[in-house]
Image 1 (cartoon, rainbow, N blue to C red):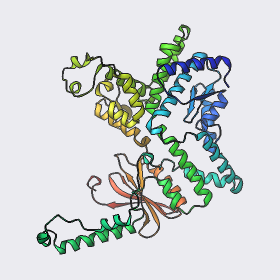
Image 2 (image 1 turned 30 degrees about the vertical axis):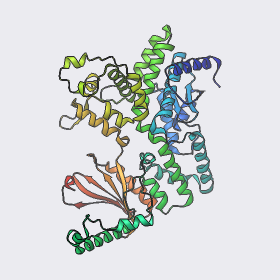
Image 3 (image 1 turned 90 degrees about the vertical axis):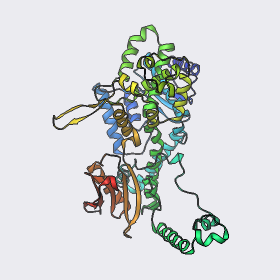
Image 4 (image 1 turned 135 degrees about the vertical axis):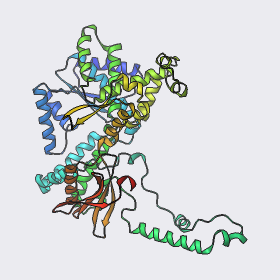
Length: 499
């Protein structure tokens, strides 16, 4: 329950939210001091989680950051129905209004963006249930045993398939009639007297034999197709005890809950920043609060040299989309115009900007948002560039301001949250029960130390040797861990790009 002063501010902001046609879940605000809000933030925004050292480490980091003036948590909001949000007790009123407007916009995004459509809207209760289950295992088997297994499982939490809720990965089982038809050799249409010439019996038998061999090969292969959801594969096929399966399923479920948040970080923060800025500057801000608000807003969207700020990129790209659709700066006529002066002054007064950004909010994630709406003009205006470390000069420096390179770098850093694409391709390698994964190489080699530690944890769960096929130093290699030592061997003499 908010004190009367803050409740009045909440109702005021909620009225402005309705006025601007946002449609959030109902939001429950709670007031916390900084120790409390740091503890909740360490738990990922939830009031209770299962015991694990990483939560304590995160709390210590947040608490020290606040103590030494290096950081401050202004808001937290949970994707739930109703949403839960936390206000810092020491914030002045203009900060509380800003946070409330920001939170309501986040809630609108959670509710209406399609990438959140499959998330559990009662996750607050589910997280508490997860905590109870793991605590019961700790009581039965001991903290060290459960925490050691949780450490291994958490190191694999990004090995899920974030697109699986929206795509049917596994084909439906075929009926007997469909199986029969699939075994028939495709034939060219021919009149009866031409049949033996157009579809000779020798050719039909040869194709039937090939199809039979392929069917037998697929039956021997396990899994039949590459599997991206490595955690689910381990739950179903690794030799785990019941409690270990349950812990792994808990970590997998939470990974899928948080996946849309890292898939839409730029859009989500950009949308919330856009609306809290609009609500504050056009409705809620008092004259006496203007300077303090401007100072805090500048801090939110600040980005130093070489820094990536999702708030800044998101809000500026939403504003750019709104401006372009208001002025008609889209479509073949605008794109094909070669008169730069005419393009700069282009204004067809269409007024479609608001409608467009609401459509974008509903349909896109960060990768599709940037791929679709990032323009050369935007890159120039926002002074975007790629940078890296020059080994010869031993310093960091700007590499390129080229639009295509900037866009490619952004997309690479946001695709799969910058994590590698890993698939299970063989769970019985050489008929020895070994697990083999494959890395879909996207131009960046795996980090060797990360890969080695991940293989060690996978091996301890699988209990048999584990390997991964990847490209390392421009060679196709099999990295392997057998439970005792790491090894790496080249498995193809051909150039990677030819394979």
